[in-house]
Length: 255
Ligand SMILES: NC(=O)c1ccc[n+]([C@@H]2O[C@H](COP(=O)([O-])OP(=O)(O)OC[C@H]3O[C@@H](n4cnc5c(N)ncnc54)[C@H](O)[C@@H]3O)[C@@H](O)[C@H]2O)c1
Image 1 (tube, rainbow, N blue to C red):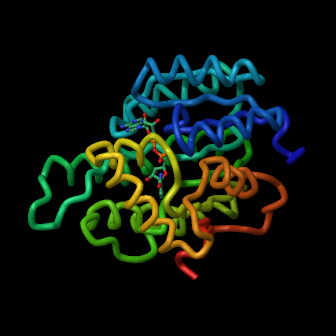
Image 2 (image 1 turned 60 degrees about the vertical axis):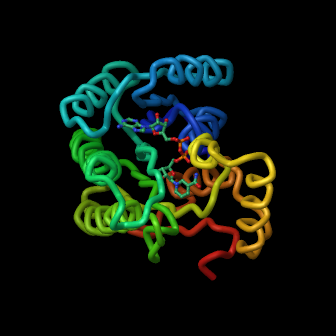
């Protein structure tokens, strides 16, 4: 991972869960990291934790707002210099619901954050990388972006779209020095998952976790740093010939 030393990296959703684990992994390998998200309290906590390890800063940004993303890219380049790598991990809290019962508000917020948010980020990240001579982008999709997910149809559609954005832009920009890939995590222990099961009693939670683990060949959920390791590898020179790939990290679920 020596190729990441001194690189400028932007991570959306970088204040919690998979994004924060990726930020820690980049900083531990000597990169300078901007973590961007909406929640400023979580941002301050993430910045403090990352600064104890190396160079990092938080910037408040809503990826569903193109002007906010444009300002984020301006900040990143002014603060640390030309952008070398980006990880798009931000996604809204999707609450599972039968499709005929899903609210328009939930569907809209999923599409505007998880699909348009990734588009807004890539638009300005690519613009910055074209000016600085290239870079890498890793988008965080999901195993739900590769197959259907009952009670999560819009989330699944959004994560399929992230793979479409990844594959299309990978072909479009590899000739100009920008290498773009996606990672598709399976069930991963993050604050997002904790929030989703917050309504369960302790017994229900234990049963839910046991059922989930049983369905995964490796017999457990992923830890966020296991996804971060895949993101780090895709961003590094070790993956120099990997282009437009959707790397599944799911403990064997899709196998
Ligand atoms: N946890 C899982 O089981 C799992 C599985 C597959 C894929 N994923 C994907 O991994 C990514 C990270 O998820 P996580 O589990 O770490 O969740 P998380 O909730 O811990 O992190 C999501 C981050 O996105 C940020 N965010 C949300 N809306 C935003 C917006 N409009 N603008 C800017 N930032 C915003 C949040 O502040 C948070 O930092 C997501 O794309 C998610 O879909 C997660």
